[in-house]
Length: 465
Image (cartoon, rainbow, N blue to C red; front, side):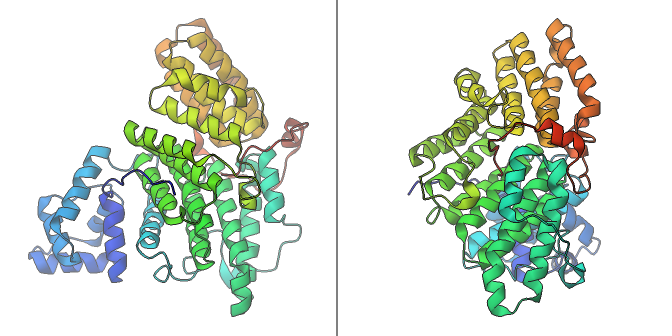
């Protein structure tokens, strides 16, 4: 069994939300208890909400009273507060709705870590999500693809094209679960969990942060209820990937570590390697280079995917993908030299347009770190064409990041050419993608004529998270 690197102190916001939820208290109740204990009558639930969302951190006065009313050692909250100050609060890119969804998922993840049986998580449909409307969903929608088929579509198309299909697939799974009897519900739990995980992945690829996190929350409930810790860990790994992509490295690291720790005893070699790579990337983005290297070393020791031993939903993971993930983490920790040969084989359209675009963006960043501006712009230009073919706002976001990093080289001819390429490609990119993945809204379901043309001849998998 591969040990996970030692865990850091928890961020204060999710910890407060977890402690409150464990007592069954509302934010209003916490505020009332704090006012009664401290003798200060002016604290409101809005301030408690800001602490949990990490928009603000409580001072020493309120940290002490929080420990008193929540019944925990003062050192626990003080350490979490100090850790959160070092990391910084939730990035501005996590908007208000996304922040609420983030805290809810982190709280649920911590509860699973504390109670692996899942008894304290509630039923899989206890929390309403956009993808799980319950009994009011209306008649079934004909022609909704099955999960396996939709995953294969995701090999070729981006979230902007498929997020609506993922939502419809999840609604149908939730409807079937809701109307089934107790025996039928147990049988349908795995399908519900897989549908929710895929819906979350597609929403994330389309730039819908809150929708992706809400779907992952439902997926975690369903996977735990189905007694499938491997799938539960995969759900948290996928959610970690989403938060890492929007700049929330602390949240991404917490979810990746909980996911790995919660399933490592039951996970296949490939899943363990994947989750350790999630830990490595989040740690690297959080500036924790040593933890990132430890996770990469542990991932290498797993040996990678085992033939015939991996779950069906991990069919896309192969040695090339794991090598590229290693290269991406090395770029994030500032080691571009060994990253370049790991990233190069999956760029230039090899393995599918989205994968080529995403890793092409990281390869361009590696060249920039090496001072090779011309090479970086050439790679980014090729990746931009793959981003147009993929229809993935997430892929485009990587290349917008390259443009930002080229700002200090704006006077060089290669940088100007790349800026012109990005501007010329704007009409062909997913709506809003040229301004960053957080600006994107999912399209209505359906494959457009443009996407049908751009994916002609593409056959290999690109990974479904």
